[in-house]
Length: 181
Image (cartoon, rainbow, N blue to C red; front, side, top):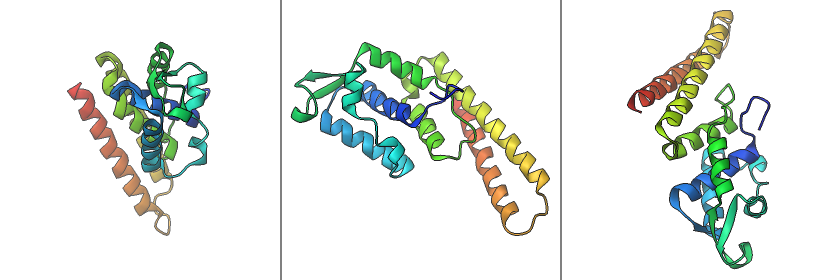
């Protein structure tokens, strides 16, 4: 994790793998690899930062285990270990870095929302409250930028207005989600 307790790309991949196995149950090696690759590619597009974490490394670290067979060579059925479940909880509680517009943050937020229901309700509320705070911080940053660049030439003001509207919409959505929990 970064110094601010936010996820690095390698840890985001761990979260996809562990969350997928915890949510859906054990999967064959090839099916898990395909599911993880499909999700990551659709959220972020192809990324070299996310390609480096192998299922074999997670097995070596004791986060997932072969329930039959031995691994990639025989398409073993893979499931999370107790250590993997603990790591999942730790990763789910990691911070999201501001601003939320970059690809890694989009992935981390998507993962939190995809697997949020696997946490207890108090932890779910805490995570959504953190995302509300992130949106509020982003809006404050964008508002300051808007004030200091008012009247600039070109298309910057219009683009900034659109970015602010999207941030406000995200904030409203997270606040509504928080009220439903």
